[in-house]
Length: 356
Image 1 (cartoon, rainbow, N blue to C red):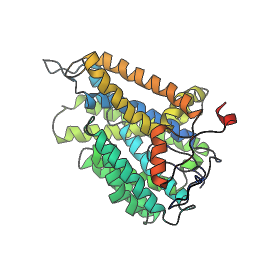
Image 2 (cartoon, rainbow, N blue to C red; image 1 turned 120 degrees about the horizontal axis):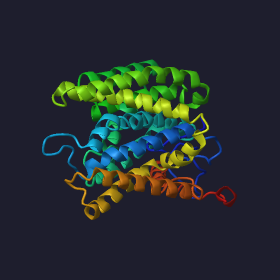
Image 3 (cartoon, rainbow, N blue to C red; image 1 turned 30 degrees about the horizontal axis):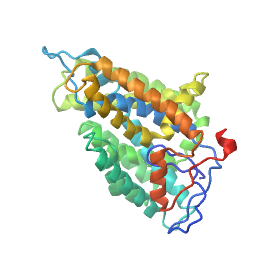
Image 4 (cartoon, rainbow, N blue to C red; image 1 turned 30 degrees about the vertical axis):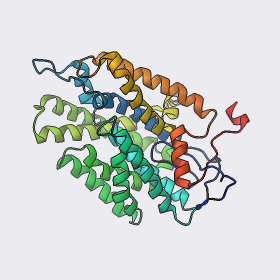
């Protein structure tokens, strides 16, 4: 494979080495086609994650004094919560595999590069925890080191089996969330090894078949979640199962929608967000933290204001990401992570003709 994919959105061939010597060979320049559909899918997941994360960054009231849900909070619980996190986690595992495959072509110790990348990601996550308790980067890094990296030595059939069993067990025996990460990571790793990511453009029929099954199943699960009393361990498992089915339906629907006339404008918005997912994920937290006291969100029921804030952040990030990527190869934090991974200063600027 000629494509490399970082943990959070860097799906591109690596650049040429800097003039200075480095412990490991640096990656090559951008010459191959990106997996743009996955960039768009990652950007789509980022949008949904922000809607959920606002309530983690600045806790808000979900029910009124009579214990009735506020409408927007209920909508998020039924249609957003646990629907986008599985997509992000699956893409992390897939990205891990693609990067390892590419790094093996230009380094004698590709797994050491991944260890360095995961440690850097974990340190970023530890700092991010101070602003957003329960954020994803730190557990991603830890689980990547403990489970995903050792799994790269296992045969694909065993990785796929472990991913399926782990994902199902996380929903049926526990309650999804962080517990679902190992299984989703392994599924992503297996899908990458099977070459599915690089043949998405030839799988329209398969995607349609998956959507035909996932959409009604997700709808039935949402109805069960809505009608079942929202307390107790079974309620959390129902919500986790509904979230996983919803994630599958959302992902396949978007991948199919990208093949329609709406695909081009959707891609123009979502792909830059996905390519700079790490930068956008962390800067969104900073933006929400800064805006919270100005808008009085903490411990309030101003859900409409919170959603307008999310829309404003995503709009600004989409515009900035598009502008930035016309001039530079990687997002700011994506570039820093790449430099740490290869332990050299990686070229970031584009040739003038490409940026024009």
